[in-house]
Length: 156
Image (cartoon, rainbow, N blue to C red; front, side, top):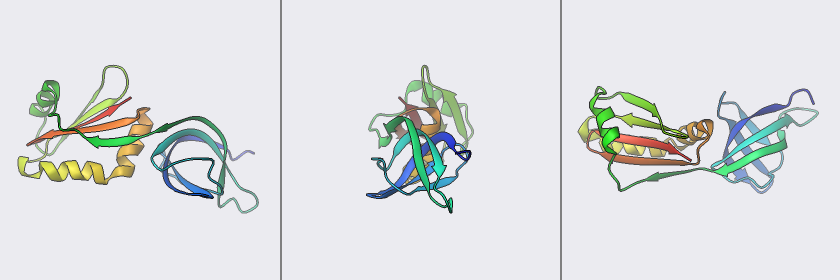
């Protein structure tokens, strides 16, 4: 098949006989004509191809890697380094930094009164947050906060 596509996908919906994959690089959505054992919030490095003759649905040709992703809100406060990053960042802005090893840390600086809303936004925008985790090759997203500082840690 010439229309095969190899990418990293986030599983956004599953049923016993189908699944929906979102390409985390280009945002394209692929509805599968079967479910090869995938679960919602899985990240899969896979090759998909359109089903003939209509090419409306897809099939998984190969799965190179599959991992479950999670988002959790920690009771721990942001680290000293994350607080220092926040201090250097204007209110309402975002600082990004690679983690030692694999992943990234994003530090948001909402107005203190809006901190809980900022945490809720990250958790509620599950698809975008987990798509970013899949792109970064990590399994876990941990959110830490204190008034005026929200750290979103993308970790293996």
